[in-house]
Amino acid sequence: MSFPSPRPALRLLSRFAAVAALGWLGWGLGVELVRAEAVERKTRLWRMPATVWRFGQRQTELFRDFTLAAGRHVPPGERILFLGPADQPDTDFFGYLWASYHLADRTVVPSSHPQALEICSHVLVFGRKLEGDPRLELVWDDKLGALYRLTNRAAAP
Amino acid sequence: MTVLGFLGVLTLCGLLGHGWAPTLARAEDGRAWRALAALVAGTVTFFLLLAVLDLVGVPWSRLSLVLGTLLVHLGLRSLVKEPVVARPPRRRTGWGTLVALVALAAVGLACLATWGLNPDFIYHWGIKGKRFFLARAFDFDFLALPWSKVRHPDYPNLLPGLFGATGVLAGRFGERGMLLWSALAFGGLLVAARETLLRTSSSFAARATLGGLALAGAAFGIGYFTLGGPDWLIALAPVAAWPAFLGTRSPASDRAVGWIAALAAASKIEGMPLGAFLVGLYFLGRGRERWRALPALLLPTAAVVACWLWGALSWGLFVEQRGGTVSFTHAATLAKTFLTTLTFPEWHRASWIFLALPLLWLPRVTRPIAAVVTLQALFYAYVYLSFPLDTAEQAEYLVRSNGARLAFHLFPAVVVGAGVLLGRLDGGNPEGGHVGPPLRGLEGLS
Image 1: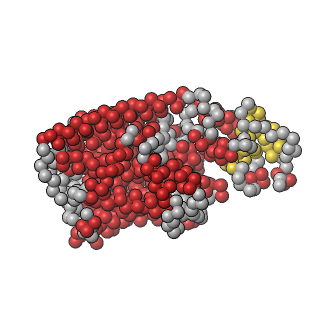
Image 2: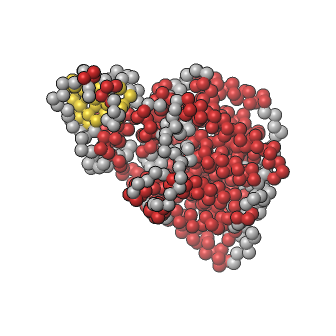
Image 3: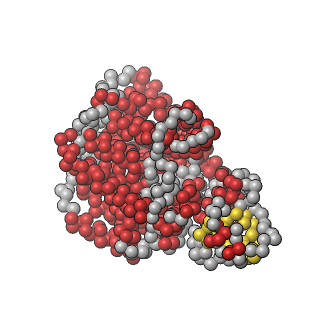
């Protein structure tokens, strides 16, 4: 299909529209850069659901420090069961994904796995503490959670 | 340090691409696109090298990666006996290139600052790369764990493989160096867009479109948290292949399309049909030489698919729930939600460009890419309509979580197509936007 020669007015109009669009998009890129930088500095998001955790936020940096500190008490290659807050299934699932990224030289197992208690040597609990369970021996404690060793795996349900 | 690792792997890919370069260049191809086509071939070859090392039981190390690359490079240099192609023509985009460089610098900055990191980098791509780095191999044992099903273990492993190799060369795994692969793909996308626009559009339209694509792509890429994901590679493929559809179709353009299709196929599961569409449409328009072109078109993708099947079948990685019959029960919700994803603020209304898609079917020069984009969009529609969904809320959640990302795959190709149309309004291109022989079998569709 061949196009007819454009009229000068149409040509001018298309050029004007293109320049306006460029200006608009340039402004948009600036907005996104400012937003991206702001994500880095956000500190009030700790109560945000784990579905919208983003790398570089204060809350995910604290979570990284928490998992790495706990991981130092677990020998490489061991399996760690991750448990999030009992009433927050999203944090339980996404927390497992984040924890397994940070502890890639260990194997982190989600709480949804039916044999998790039998195959793991440690339990990393985030957002709560587990007390009164005879199978668990406290290894490391932190304000964000705790790490336990599973002492009697055979007795696990 | 991981930035040095990225530069190291990039050098190895470039070296392998240098070996392929004489087989990929035509006289009318610009210098930058020649380099891009060679880098694509080199990157896919590097991925195949990683797979071969894995297959023969050689762990990835600085020594094995460098030595393997040098051996393949020397082999290519001694085997490839292509005639020297004429010096590339000089074409300029002036301020369009300047705007593109500013946008590319913004993406590079975001990568180095780890802004806009794709959450899937944590959930899938990055963790796979980290495990591959630690295992010094494709860690299929990790992918085969029952609880790894949420990480799409059956996806092709080009990007995690590059991450793993970057970590091996750097001596550690860090996000900065890994994210730079997204910036590289964006740079390649701009190079390919520039080549197509310079050859098919007016000078002003080429500059404006290149600048607009760069600004909109960077804004969405950073704002929608896509860095570190494979979507940039999928978006790159149709734009990178377009120059091969222009001008004289030759064994060189056959090979270029073959490597670019392989890159798409190795990047993500969505890239497999995209690679097939690129090869199929190019094949249809290849004329009498089409059967002779077939090996060059298919072999790179066949090698990539063989690697993928070897891993996925040997370790039983295929996840159930793929494909199925189409159901229109939630079609209205799916369509409405998809349109909503095109209004997400990170687009800055640039997604309106999709309205131009039907117009891309009109001129012959944009028709092949219009066909690729339409077929890929139909494939995405099929995936949505065949996905097992019980409620409208599930349908909405499904599309909300990935609709904008899938649109981003096709966005650059549509922008470049719109730029070609804008060039027609602005007086046309001095080279006439010559496109190869007609796409036989597709004339009836226009």
